[in-house]
Amino acid sequence: MGKKGSGYQYSYNAQISVDSDNGIIVGQHISQHANDKQEVKPALEAIAEATDNASIGKMSEDNGYYSGPNLQAFDDANIDAYMATDRQEKPATEGLEDSDRKFVKADFIYHEADDSFTCPAGEKLIYNTASKAKHKSYRVSKDICRDCPLRKRCSGDDNKDPGKVIRTDRHEAIRQAMNRKMETKEAKAVYERRKVIAEPPFGQIKNSGFRGFSVRGKEKVAGEFSLVCSAYNFKKIVKLVSTGSIRLEEAKRLKMAA
Image (cartoon, rainbow, N blue to C red; front, side, top):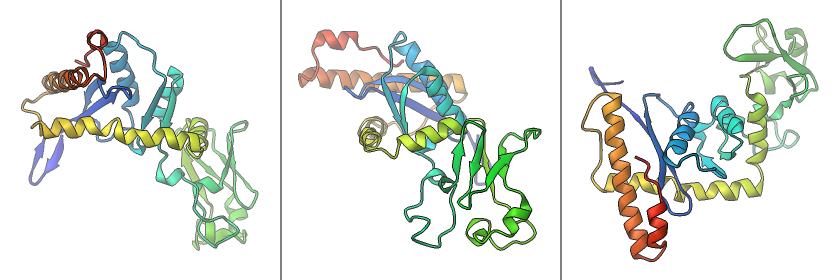
Protein backbone atom coordinates (compact mmCIF):
# COMPACT_ATOMS: atom_id res chain seq x y z
CA MET A 1 0.00 0.00 0.00
CA GLY A 2 1.48 3.33 -0.99
CA LYS A 3 0.59 6.85 0.12
CA LYS A 4 -1.01 9.15 -2.43
CA GLY A 5 -1.95 12.67 -1.47
CA SER A 6 -3.89 12.59 1.77
CA GLY A 7 -4.83 8.92 1.40
CA TYR A 8 -3.42 5.57 0.37
CA GLN A 9 -3.48 3.50 -2.78
CA TYR A 10 -3.05 -0.24 -3.14
CA SER A 11 0.19 -1.02 -4.98
CA TYR A 12 1.49 -4.29 -6.37
CA ASN A 13 4.82 -5.30 -7.85
CA ALA A 14 4.16 -7.33 -11.01
CA GLN A 15 7.02 -9.61 -12.06
CA ILE A 16 7.52 -11.53 -15.30
CA SER A 17 10.23 -13.85 -16.64
CA VAL A 18 10.52 -13.97 -20.42
CA ASP A 19 11.92 -16.63 -22.73
CA SER A 20 14.72 -15.15 -24.83
CA ASP A 21 14.00 -17.30 -27.90
CA ASN A 22 10.33 -16.49 -28.49
CA GLY A 23 9.44 -13.68 -26.09
CA ILE A 24 6.96 -15.87 -24.21
CA ILE A 25 6.23 -15.13 -20.55
CA VAL A 26 7.37 -18.30 -18.78
CA GLY A 27 6.81 -17.14 -15.22
CA GLN A 28 4.91 -14.40 -13.42
CA HIS A 29 4.03 -13.46 -9.88
CA ILE A 30 2.74 -10.59 -7.78
CA SER A 31 4.37 -9.19 -4.66
CA GLN A 32 3.84 -6.17 -2.44
CA HIS A 33 7.51 -5.42 -1.94
CA ALA A 34 8.48 -1.85 -2.69
CA ASN A 35 11.48 -2.96 -4.77
CA ASP A 36 12.82 -6.04 -6.58
CA LYS A 37 15.55 -7.01 -4.13
CA GLN A 38 13.69 -10.12 -2.91
CA GLU A 39 12.01 -11.23 -6.13
CA VAL A 40 14.41 -13.76 -7.68
CA LYS A 41 13.45 -16.72 -5.50
CA PRO A 42 9.68 -16.39 -6.11
CA ALA A 43 10.41 -15.79 -9.81
CA LEU A 44 12.34 -19.05 -10.04
CA GLU A 45 9.52 -20.84 -8.24
CA ALA A 46 6.99 -19.40 -10.69
CA ILE A 47 9.08 -20.54 -13.67
CA ALA A 48 9.43 -24.03 -12.23
CA GLU A 49 5.66 -24.27 -11.71
CA ALA A 50 4.78 -22.98 -15.19
CA THR A 51 7.35 -25.05 -17.09
CA ASP A 52 7.33 -28.32 -15.14
CA ASN A 53 10.80 -27.58 -13.73
CA ALA A 54 12.43 -26.89 -17.08
CA SER A 55 16.15 -26.22 -16.76
CA ILE A 56 17.29 -22.60 -16.90
CA GLY A 57 20.55 -21.80 -18.66
CA LYS A 58 21.01 -18.06 -18.29
CA MET A 59 19.08 -15.20 -16.74
CA SER A 60 19.71 -11.47 -16.78
CA GLU A 61 18.30 -8.74 -14.51
CA ASP A 62 18.71 -5.00 -14.17
CA ASN A 63 20.39 -3.41 -11.16
CA GLY A 64 17.07 -3.06 -9.36
CA TYR A 65 17.48 -6.74 -8.51
CA TYR A 66 21.02 -6.35 -7.22
CA SER A 67 20.98 -7.68 -3.67
CA GLY A 68 22.61 -10.40 -1.61
CA PRO A 69 19.44 -12.53 -1.31
CA ASN A 70 18.80 -12.41 -5.07
CA LEU A 71 22.39 -13.34 -5.87
CA GLN A 72 22.22 -16.16 -3.35
CA ALA A 73 19.01 -17.47 -4.94
CA PHE A 74 20.76 -17.76 -8.30
CA ASP A 75 23.80 -19.33 -6.69
CA ASP A 76 21.67 -21.91 -4.88
CA ALA A 77 19.87 -22.78 -8.13
CA ASN A 78 23.18 -23.01 -10.02
CA ILE A 79 21.97 -20.56 -12.68
CA ASP A 80 24.33 -18.54 -14.86
CA ALA A 81 23.06 -15.09 -13.90
CA TYR A 82 23.95 -11.68 -15.30
CA MET A 83 22.90 -8.86 -13.00
CA ALA A 84 23.81 -5.22 -13.46
CA THR A 85 25.70 -4.20 -10.34
CA ASP A 86 24.59 -1.44 -8.04
CA ARG A 87 26.09 1.97 -8.74
CA GLN A 88 27.91 2.00 -5.41
CA GLU A 89 29.65 -1.28 -6.32
CA LYS A 90 31.05 -0.13 -9.66
CA PRO A 91 34.73 0.78 -10.05
CA ALA A 92 35.46 4.48 -10.58
CA THR A 93 36.19 5.60 -14.13
CA GLU A 94 39.41 7.30 -13.01
CA GLY A 95 42.32 5.37 -11.52
CA LEU A 96 43.55 6.03 -8.00
CA GLU A 97 46.91 7.31 -9.22
CA ASP A 98 45.45 9.46 -11.99
CA SER A 99 43.27 11.71 -9.83
CA ASP A 100 42.52 12.90 -6.31
CA ARG A 101 38.98 11.52 -6.35
CA LYS A 102 37.25 10.09 -3.32
CA PHE A 103 37.61 6.37 -2.75
CA VAL A 104 34.74 4.07 -3.68
CA LYS A 105 33.97 0.60 -2.36
CA ALA A 106 35.59 -1.04 -5.41
CA ASP A 107 38.94 0.50 -4.37
CA PHE A 108 38.89 -1.73 -1.27
CA ILE A 109 40.03 -5.29 -1.98
CA TYR A 110 37.89 -8.01 -0.46
CA HIS A 111 39.51 -11.19 0.91
CA GLU A 112 37.07 -14.07 1.14
CA ALA A 113 39.53 -16.28 3.04
CA ASP A 114 39.41 -14.18 6.20
CA ASP A 115 36.38 -12.03 5.35
CA SER A 116 38.17 -8.70 5.34
CA PHE A 117 38.95 -5.71 3.11
CA THR A 118 42.24 -3.98 2.39
CA CYS A 119 42.15 -0.23 1.84
CA PRO A 120 44.25 1.70 -0.75
CA ALA A 121 46.72 2.52 2.04
CA GLY A 122 47.28 -1.19 2.71
CA GLU A 123 45.41 -1.35 6.02
CA LYS A 124 43.00 -4.18 6.82
CA LEU A 125 39.34 -3.51 7.56
CA ILE A 126 37.72 -6.13 9.78
CA TYR A 127 34.29 -6.43 11.33
CA ASN A 128 33.14 -7.09 14.85
CA THR A 129 32.10 -10.75 14.93
CA ALA A 130 30.14 -10.14 18.12
CA SER A 131 27.86 -7.61 16.42
CA LYS A 132 24.24 -8.69 15.96
CA ALA A 133 23.45 -5.98 13.41
CA LYS A 134 21.75 -7.04 10.17
CA HIS A 135 24.56 -5.55 8.08
CA LYS A 136 28.25 -6.13 8.69
CA SER A 137 30.46 -3.08 9.18
CA TYR A 138 34.17 -3.28 8.36
CA ARG A 139 36.64 -0.67 9.56
CA VAL A 140 40.24 0.11 10.46
CA SER A 141 41.25 1.44 13.85
CA LYS A 142 40.30 5.11 14.20
CA ASP A 143 43.82 5.95 15.33
CA ILE A 144 45.31 4.49 12.15
CA CYS A 145 42.81 6.34 9.94
CA ARG A 146 43.34 9.63 11.78
CA ASP A 147 47.02 9.71 10.83
CA CYS A 148 46.60 8.35 7.29
CA PRO A 149 47.78 10.72 4.51
CA LEU A 150 44.87 9.54 2.34
CA ARG A 151 42.21 10.30 4.97
CA LYS A 152 40.59 13.19 3.07
CA ARG A 153 40.07 10.98 0.03
CA CYS A 154 38.69 8.21 2.18
CA SER A 155 36.63 9.33 5.15
CA GLY A 156 36.78 13.12 4.94
CA ASP A 157 37.93 15.79 7.36
CA ASP A 158 35.94 14.80 10.42
CA ASN A 159 38.56 14.34 13.15
CA LYS A 160 35.97 13.00 15.57
CA ASP A 161 35.23 9.91 13.49
CA PRO A 162 37.79 9.61 10.68
CA GLY A 163 37.61 5.84 10.29
CA LYS A 164 36.33 4.53 6.96
CA VAL A 165 33.43 2.10 7.28
CA ILE A 166 32.29 -0.38 4.62
CA ARG A 167 28.87 -1.89 5.19
CA THR A 168 27.70 -5.06 3.50
CA ASP A 169 26.03 -8.36 4.36
CA ARG A 170 26.87 -12.06 4.51
CA HIS A 171 26.67 -12.30 0.71
CA GLU A 172 29.75 -10.20 -0.01
CA ALA A 173 31.65 -13.04 -1.70
CA ILE A 174 28.98 -13.58 -4.36
CA ARG A 175 28.58 -9.81 -4.75
CA GLN A 176 32.27 -9.58 -5.56
CA ALA A 177 32.01 -12.49 -8.00
CA MET A 178 29.14 -10.81 -9.87
CA ASN A 179 31.02 -7.49 -9.93
CA ARG A 180 34.01 -9.15 -11.59
CA LYS A 181 31.81 -11.08 -13.99
CA MET A 182 29.92 -8.00 -15.18
CA GLU A 183 33.17 -6.23 -16.04
CA THR A 184 33.89 -8.80 -18.80
CA LYS A 185 32.97 -8.27 -22.45
CA GLU A 186 31.12 -11.58 -22.55
CA ALA A 187 28.86 -10.63 -19.63
CA LYS A 188 28.16 -7.18 -21.05
CA ALA A 189 27.15 -8.75 -24.36
CA VAL A 190 24.72 -11.13 -22.64
CA TYR A 191 23.26 -8.35 -20.52
CA GLU A 192 22.83 -6.05 -23.52
CA ARG A 193 20.14 -8.39 -24.84
CA ARG A 194 18.03 -8.01 -21.70
CA LYS A 195 16.34 -4.81 -22.81
CA VAL A 196 14.95 -6.49 -25.94
CA ILE A 197 13.76 -9.55 -24.00
CA ALA A 198 12.19 -8.43 -20.73
CA GLU A 199 10.98 -4.91 -21.51
CA PRO A 200 8.84 -5.35 -24.68
CA PRO A 201 6.16 -7.57 -23.03
CA PHE A 202 5.35 -4.92 -20.43
CA GLY A 203 5.14 -2.29 -23.16
CA GLN A 204 2.86 -4.46 -25.30
CA ILE A 205 0.64 -5.29 -22.33
CA LYS A 206 0.22 -1.58 -21.58
CA ASN A 207 -0.43 -0.76 -25.23
CA SER A 208 -3.18 -3.38 -25.28
CA GLY A 209 -5.07 -1.27 -22.76
CA PHE A 210 -4.03 -2.71 -19.40
CA ARG A 211 -3.01 0.19 -17.18
CA GLY A 212 -3.91 -1.00 -13.71
CA PHE A 213 -5.63 -3.71 -11.73
CA SER A 214 -9.41 -3.63 -11.48
CA VAL A 215 -9.63 -5.72 -8.28
CA ARG A 216 -8.24 -5.53 -4.76
CA GLY A 217 -6.46 -8.07 -2.63
CA LYS A 218 -3.28 -9.88 -3.55
CA GLU A 219 -4.98 -13.15 -4.49
CA LYS A 220 -7.45 -11.47 -6.84
CA VAL A 221 -4.73 -9.25 -8.33
CA ALA A 222 -2.56 -12.32 -8.93
CA GLY A 223 -5.43 -13.97 -10.77
CA GLU A 224 -6.01 -10.91 -12.93
CA PHE A 225 -2.34 -10.59 -13.79
CA SER A 226 -2.24 -14.30 -14.67
CA LEU A 227 -5.03 -13.70 -17.20
CA VAL A 228 -3.21 -10.66 -18.59
CA CYS A 229 -0.03 -12.69 -19.10
CA SER A 230 -1.99 -15.57 -20.67
CA ALA A 231 -3.65 -13.18 -23.13
CA TYR A 232 -0.25 -11.77 -24.04
CA ASN A 233 1.13 -15.28 -24.59
CA PHE A 234 -1.78 -16.34 -26.80
CA LYS A 235 -1.30 -13.28 -29.01
CA LYS A 236 2.44 -13.85 -29.13
CA ILE A 237 2.13 -17.52 -30.08
CA VAL A 238 -0.46 -16.77 -32.79
CA LYS A 239 1.89 -14.21 -34.29
CA LEU A 240 4.86 -16.58 -34.13
CA VAL A 241 2.89 -19.32 -35.89
CA SER A 242 1.43 -16.97 -38.53
CA THR A 243 4.86 -15.59 -39.41
CA GLY A 244 6.43 -19.02 -39.53
CA SER A 245 8.79 -18.28 -36.64
CA ILE A 246 7.64 -21.49 -34.95
CA ARG A 247 5.66 -24.50 -36.13
CA LEU A 248 2.22 -25.34 -34.81
CA GLU A 249 3.59 -28.47 -33.11
CA GLU A 250 6.11 -26.34 -31.22
CA ALA A 251 3.42 -23.84 -30.25
CA LYS A 252 1.38 -26.63 -28.69
CA ARG A 253 4.33 -27.51 -26.46
CA LEU A 254 4.78 -23.98 -25.16
CA LYS A 255 3.52 -23.66 -21.61
CA MET A 256 1.40 -20.74 -20.52
CA ALA A 257 2.57 -18.64 -17.59
CA ALA A 258 -0.91 -18.68 -16.07
